[in-house]
Length: 284
Image (cartoon, rainbow, N blue to C red; front, side):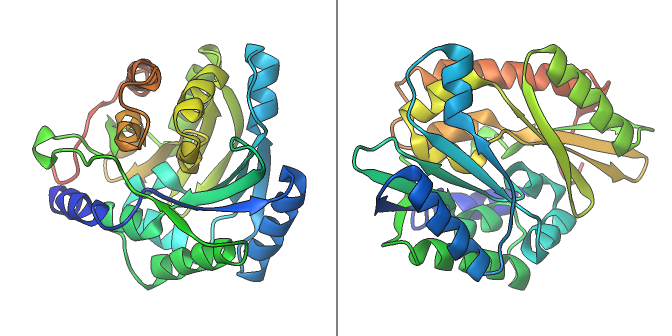
């Protein structure tokens, strides 16, 4: 995995964390166009989350219209999660649709060219998913790539995900435990979803989302936050996205999002530790 992480750092200089297009029109109109483009390329929505409305309702703060279209798992997602369960931190893909910029609606998602290479799962199926996502956005307008403002030092030891191994456990039991712990901490949950061998849990905390997407709306490719559980020989692996990975996006460093991401990391670690697992690194 370290080799793939180094490769991801190198590729990140040429590729992007997210890709997006700006389309003139109201969010509802552009979202309809985006859904049609996705379906034309064989990608179906599993759920559409009104993140902006949730943030305004729960926090009382002003926030632009912002929707998350979580796609149904397809061959690329299944292949990626089967090859490396850590890929579940961005799967199934989220397409974000927001009105943060006046006069246009922005539609975007993650850049599979970087993400799948970083996670060591690139192959024909993931290439196909990347191509379909790019083609879908390309039907709406000119693609823009949001390149990282910086890339992490591979020597830092930071991984794309926080991982814990729970000896003797079953993934299905870990899913129930994680969902209960997340709910007790005030995070909103949507129904979990099976992606290959991994069960993906998608919690959201409105205040975290407000701070993060105020600093960088293109971070929506990683929302809702993903936790996952998967059976392994001798037990279960549980994990979640490494929040500090988002600090490499433009506009995040030096903003209130950094403190929020540190808080989120602490909470995520505590939730994962509640399973009784021990920190895990691939290959150990």
